[in-house]
Amino acid sequence: MGKVRGTVAYGSRRISIIIRMNKLLDRNSKTIIFAIFLFALAARLSGILCIANFDNPDMEEFGTLTKNLITGNGYSFWRYDPELGCNHKIGKWLPSACMPIGYPLLVTGFFYVFGMNASGFCILQAFQAVLGAMVCVFLYLIGKKIFSRRIAILSAIALACYPVFIYMASEFTAANLYIFLNTLFVLLLIKADNEKHLSKFILIGGLFGAIALSRPQVVVYAPFLIMWLFLKLRRTFLRTVPLLFAGTVIVLAPWVVRNYCVFQRFVPLTSLGGLNLWRGHNEEAIGTGRTREGKCLFSNPDILQELLRLPYSQDLEITRDEIYLHSAISFMKDNPIRSFVVLPIRKFLYYWLLDITDPLAKHPLYWVPWFVVLPFFIIGIFYSLADYDKYLIFYIYFVVATGISMIFFVLPRYRLFIEPFIILFAAYGFFEILKRLKLYPRKVTAERTC
Image 1: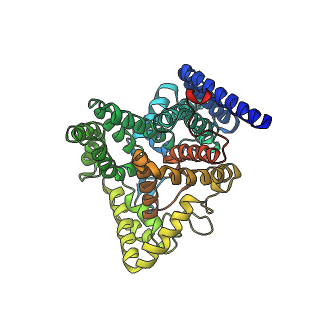
Image 2 (image 1 turned 120 degrees about the vertical axis):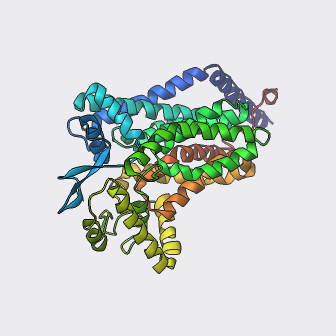
Image 3 (image 1 turned 30 degrees about the vertical axis):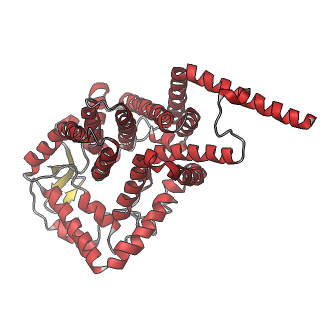
């Protein structure tokens, strides 16, 4: 009898403590947000100080585009030489649309104000650290909205100290911008869905357009997100979609008009669609954009010869991409089993497990945290299916992101677009395990303390 009383007393005390903690969390919501932001920012700034190169950072294609914008050569990436064709060393600069202008425009703004030097690099990376910290805050607000405060806190903390995202703040990559924009987009979409504030959909549409200017593949999500809105906003759907469309067009129109004026043809977002399709569909393709030996796939001897024969023209970059596109389509027609069965399966495994051909993906700080998160994510998805309509927007993200990689090719950074949401569902899965182990009460109410 005494043992039963002791067990009941222990259970009551535990429930009472949890209730008091929940009340404390409710009273200090702003404090929690501020603490998450500071913790995430400190982690990213520390990472920048430890690994960043302020004197001569690797800016890849963004460095070339930014330098040309600042020096008056226009938005250019390739040069043209009669003997070498398109190259990066000598010749006349060619107008470009290889990268949507979103992130290069941001970088150019910083370098124009602060200089393209160590100070400018440092300030830009600090700004990227702020964006990364805000992503953690947005994830907390999303988690609190659709799950619970505890799950939101755990997911935000996990994202704050996730090594890949800490490292990302020190890199010159558009992921810093489009992950920030995308988490804000989803947060506003969920809130607007609940609050029915139609005017917000102009801003949400503008955000979608801004994401497309940094991550053009996001346009594939549009029809699925519209279907989701139809299911959620049946009565206001016909008024909502035009506002979303208007916001998106306002943001995208300058870039689309510029491309048409420069190339004299319709190039909505990027001129790399053909190349990206070819990298996933050619004789050496294994699904990752690299060969088995880890060599980057950007061409082959036949395509190189064809590219060298191209004369100079304003739309040369578009013509180059069409050559890649035709080669990819030809390969898919000649190799349907490999293109539509073998390679997609490989891409799926590379995307959700590990890209063994990428040097960065082999680092323990990349793959160890991922294989810790992945089992909890799978568990979280499984238990979330009982209330699937509540989480449908996230299922759309997971499925469409996977499908895009299965059509094109896989790079480790491609999964970063949805990884904050993966971490959120992993936190949900973690707490579901605790519930089933009876280490965390399913439902805590004041009446249970009586």
